[in-house]
Length: 228
Image (cartoon, rainbow, N blue to C red; front, side):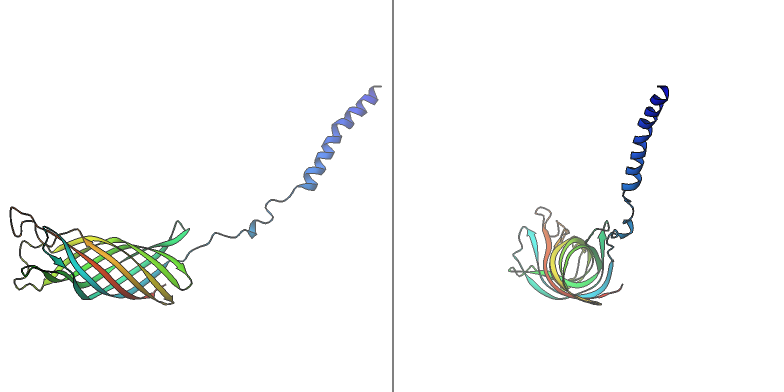
């Protein structure tokens, strides 16, 4: 009787272990068998470009009190620019930065004879340039600022101590690029608004302050070369 009970107990003990061993070893899938076939994350190549730009501007001012401002045409605007496109967090390849040096002219006309300016400028723009690529084209959106210095003026008396020659302001605009590597043509329209008046507030009167902020509409075409 004792041998029969021991035999029955041993059978109950080892039968589940034998069955479990067959299930674990025989049916277990290798979860790491295909690890080498998973595609690596996409790597975006940064783009570095150097280019020149020609611009045609429609220039005027915002004044208070009004000086009867009107637009003048400024066809002499040239820029040397560096552009860097990169992927944000290695995921979003829509971002870039552009900076360089610009030499040009701006000013304003007036319906009053005693008002009006035209002067040369040099500027350093710094712009964030967002892009959307499709086929051989890019849509461009610009937002940024600039620092500038007002050079010679066509005013007979020249600049005086009541004129402000340092300049800074904001830029914004959009454009379209055509890519045929290693070259790229960019056509843009931008709006520039100065945050620095041309004149000191008390240039003409200590009692009535004058504010005169330049603002321009700029149409431009640029030719860029892809460096690497």
